[in-house]
Image (cartoon, rainbow, N blue to C red; front, side, top):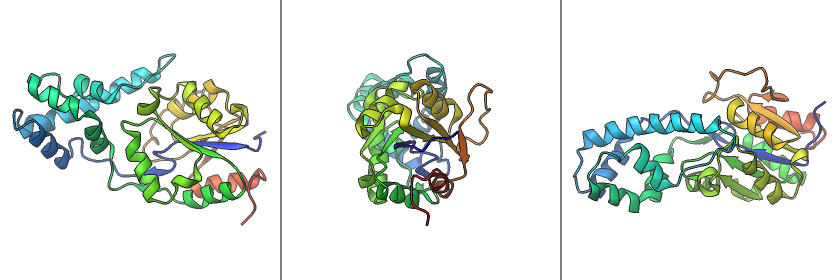
Length: 254
């Protein structure tokens, strides 16, 4: 039986917002890196290293997610480990010194859009005094914060927790526990809403969340579903989440 929640913990990508996949080496980021290092490395090599670096970082994230205590890497280490390792020393140093703004530029998606029905669901939850927090893996959480602020949604959250700021990656339960502490609700009374079985449902289970709600997303549609990781409910989008909250009597019917 799905219990009514006293708080919501929500993922960012695939739940609050979505965007088409961007090129692995965005031309504007390639130009920015080329200018930053004074052309020491060619634009073609930068593009190739960004492409392979993104793939390598993704593999590292998958491996980290299978560990008992997944952590996130500092921005400078992401660049050094996955992109600039073969670059001349002066270029590596320049990137390290600008690691955080560069991570922001790599993370930012101009095509981000609030997912259908999410604004309505969040506002209904806020009106029902249901506290909410963001719990998201992110290369640079500041980009996510700025998007939510521009979309007029930031004020609806008690707090936002991002892996690069906390040093923890989902499915590490400590990230969910931080969010539950911030909203002042025991984790067992929180719904954890995410789009990934391996990251979000697993995090909800490890943390002891009251329920794991899986929201369908093009980002994770092809993920296999292990038999030992089943969500308590599935929804298509924010409209589905709102309907589920109404069904459980947590927000007023429209």
